[in-house]
Image 1 (spheres, helix red, strand yellow):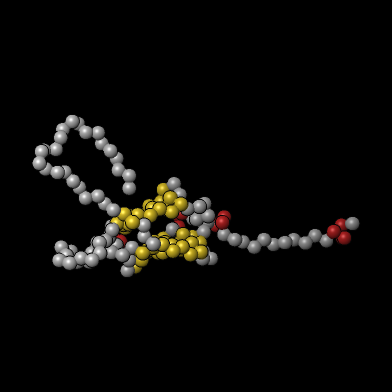
Image 2: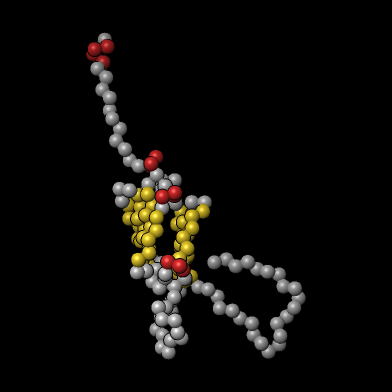
Length: 137
């Protein structure tokens, strides 16, 4: 994520003390997209994410998924083989998606987004009218 740079005022950190901060790391969650009769279904794996730590935004046709993963046990591990990362992924939506009707569901770390097709983009059958040219002659 881009970070805003702030100009310094000339003050320096005290000598002998190093100023650091832990930077947040983001990874792209793996996602599958399916086309259904109603529109699109997007499935994304977000292990360790609860609904309170998930943000889904839609702005300027860009769908943004941002989530913070947490371990189930809130304590310092004495042994750890993997680290949970935060998730960030964006998708550009076309005009064919009805953005007002998008729904989201999170179940056991799997996000399911339903992106319904807009009425104007839904396929429809066109009736063919037959004119009898011989009767007009």
